[in-house]
Length: 233
Image 1 (cartoon, helix red, strand yellow):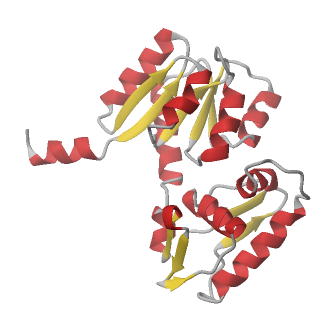
Image 2: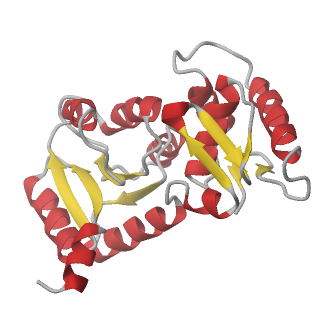
C-alpha cells in the first residue's frame, strides 16, 4: 500500500443513501464507492435514519421521498432539527409542489428519477463543495466550537446569545446557501414555537453588529431579497 493510497482512503467522505428500491440503492452505492472519494452506507427505511444518525456523522445524505416507515420529507424535517448535514432529495414525483416542499424543509438539492449515476455524483460533488462545513468561514477568520459554545472572529471572542450563536453556526456551516426565514426560525427554536418571522431579522441585525465590531469593512451575512439570508464568502 503506497502512502498516496493511504491518504486517499483517509479523506473519503461519508454518504448516507436512504432508498428502499434495492437496485437503485445498490447502483448508487457502487457508483459512489467506485469514485474512490466516498464511503457509502445504505438504509431502506425512513424510520431508521434518526437512530443511525445518533452514532454516525455523514457528510451528505441522499434521501428518497417515497420510503416505508417515514417518508423522505418528514425525515428531512426531523434531520434539520438536529443537523445541517447537506441533503439531496431523490424523487419520482415530478409535481413542482413536492420539489418546493422538499427544499423548503431544508434540502439542499433534488434529483428526479430516472437519473444517471454520473448526474448523482456531479450533484454530490457540487453540494459538498458548496457546503464544506466551516471551510470558507475559517478562511475569513471565523472559528466556531459548538461543544464549548464559543465563537471567535480574527481571534476576538464574540459574545453571542444562544439564538445568535445558533444562527451564526448554521449560516457559516453552509456558506453561500440561502436560508429562508422559516428555516432560520427552526434553527433558532428547536421546539418550533410560534413566533413572528421578522424576529429573524432582529436577531440577524444584532448578529451583524457584533461581527462589525470586530471587522467593520466586511458584510458577513447577506440579505437575499424575497428569499432570506446567506453567509458571504
